[in-house]
Length: 124
Image 1 (cartoon, rainbow, N blue to C red):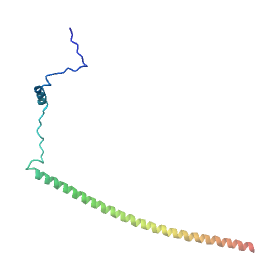
Image 2: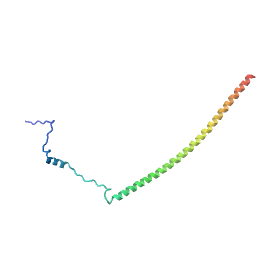
Image 3: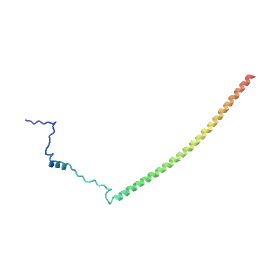
Image 4: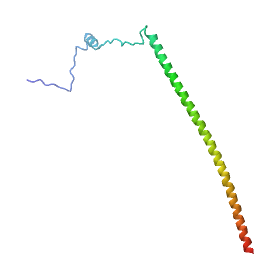
């Protein structure tokens, strides 16, 4: 006769529940790993590596600082040139505006003269 398996009901292993069975399972799952070697932790290499790293970082910061100072100088020079150009443009606009006002006043004056002349002609 063929055996029927019931897949819905889990089969319990009672030998695991005892203290000896539990110990066997715990022992099988314990995995001890040795620590990875860290080159910065060894007493002989640690100060050298740290000082080397610090020297590299100092050099990088100095290089970065120098390049930033150069860029800032270039930006300041460009900004000064732009300010000077803006001042010149402003003075040109003021000059043209003044000329425009003078021409406007002159046109108004000429129109008034023309009007007076017409009135004089009409009276004659």
